[in-house]
Image (tube, rainbow, N blue to C red; front, side):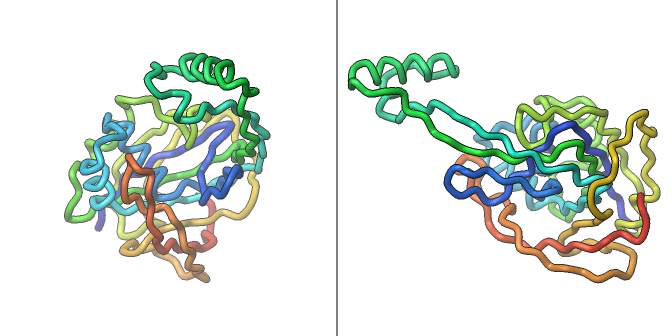
Amino acid sequence: MEDYLVFQLCGPMAAWGDTAVGEVRPSLDHPGRSQVLGLLAAALGIGRHEDETHAALSAGYRVAVSTRNAGHLLRDYHTVQVPPQVALKKMPHHTRRDELLALARYNRLQGKSAGTILSSRDYRVDGDWLVLVQSTDRAPHMLDDLAEALRYPRFVLYLGRKSCPVSRPLFPQVVKAENLHLALQAAEFPSAEVRYPRAGNATLYWEDGMEIGFDAKTTALQRNDQPLSRTRWQFSRRTEYRADRPEEV
């Protein structure tokens, strides 16, 4: 029997970032390893500059995600004013207002117009996921402590971007089970008054070292979401496995 931390992630909008090239910011249809670890780090109050603490968190846990609803794709078109680094030199830029004032001053001195970047950002609308976390022998925190942190997080929790708040409590709980499938069946969540309509298949994603507990056609996927450095925003490749669930959990 293994211990699993199980919690839900639901929201009207979510952004589960994929590899970003140029001005396009895509989103996958489920949270990856880096997003789940980032959520746990926020709940624990780990700052972005604490690379060693983030590395210990990454080494200490395995992550699986069960999709109850993958949501629908929404693409948002953005125009953003971004000041160059030379404009911020020796200028205070603690807030967005400071950045825009520095950009206006730089443009005025250089006789330039406002520098605008065009970009598109993808979101998942009305998504609903279950997350399972399993400890390794290097886990820095007990699963019960992680559950408590998710109930009373130090930092605000959101679904990939700050504009994507959670819409329901996470209801974190630690269950004992022989595999992921039984862990999902053992976890209990209050039924929501409003359940989003299903979009896509019911699927399970997991990583090496986790037992799923049912026979299914498995697909191996390559994901660039293994955290290397939080401060430098660097990730490495890992293998993620996918299979359709035999029944809805």
